[in-house]
Image (tube, rainbow, N blue to C red; front, side, top):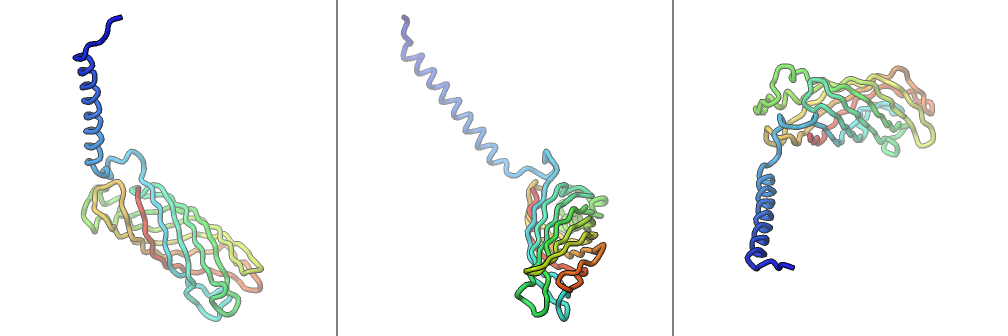
Length: 213
């Protein structure tokens, strides 16, 4: 059997070392590339948002009150003129006010219409262009559960809303952070009665953080 000489062993080790160095250099170069520009995204950008606010509600109360409320949305098509989202909302009035306060819990499928997206180019880096392009109106269908601690009802309705989205990061990246200021209303197709209280429409105001990725 023929044995390998020391020179051949050293050559193989050098080759392996060069291969490792090349792999490390490639990894470092990729890490230094930074986030991808939005124009190079390989799929439609998604959005996820969480927020807090108030529901201006008079159901079961002596007058309209600001009821604490929570909001969450997730959607697709952050750069499209018309995107799609699922929106969740809940308010918590029980134990906070006298009378027969009603808690609300709603889920809606909505179209997000961005009028400025038809006029402003997607890659425009100016702040006001990004602000206008991201702002939108909402329209869709929703289902709301309305209840007290012992009774509950539900209603279908037309979800309506509007939002102003303020960019918080630099322009030109596939991922970004925004601040959303929004208003929401659901026009019920009928008025359920819960524990003697007719549950009508309410208006919600909220703000939240939005991540686009």
